[in-house]
Length: 294
Image 1: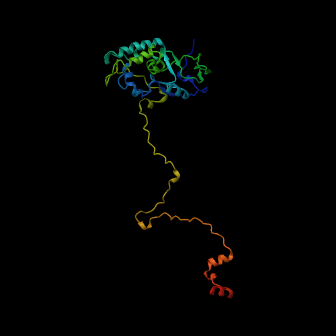
Image 2: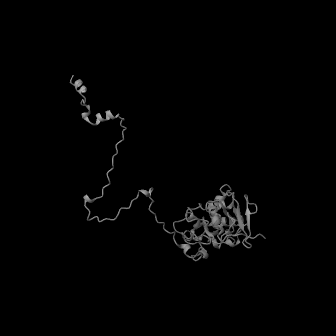
Image 3: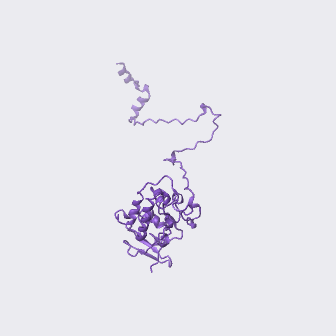
């Protein structure tokens, strides 16, 4: 008999961590979440306000979160269970709101009686599984012919709805028809639980504490943008503004204008003397004075 692996027993890394992370099969941002609540027989906002309940959240390895979160892998419930889910879903979407069946009370459609296969058609990397009893790690290469079957703590109802993108080209599969049933009717603005107000979703996973189930996401503070060039910022020294007049205002230093250096022509000593001293042009000898007089 084949041992069923858990959701945390598969990873893209051969090292398995004891600190697992939660992955929600249907995120809070799921566009048709109110239709899912109506089809499941829940009250309005029951799933949205308890998004980390055990019917929607599974434990996974940190390295596997990107594959599941980006729609590259899906846990597929057994087909006969999907057929039963489809039958009840069609009833809930066609009857009055107070006559709907609550999904968790439908026989043979709970998490304990369902076996899952893992759709890995969009993955080509090597995957690793850990035996839940012995801890032995096995490597699997695409197309993963020896991939084991899995069991999940989540509801097969939600797992089937979350796996709709795995059957976009196979319209005959019940999962494809389940997601088509979501649009059979338009739910009212407000609706209660189909069977009994006390029968809602299960308690969230206790290992993660009660604060994760209903607490709103933390508000992100908008940090001031970092200046592009921090070198341009200068700190001004503290000063007393009241005792300082306009004449005392510090002024930027004057820029020293430097003229362009020109290269002067070199002169011989006699020509230099004539250029510097104007009397150097006067006749000095008697012969020069005679010539000057004529």
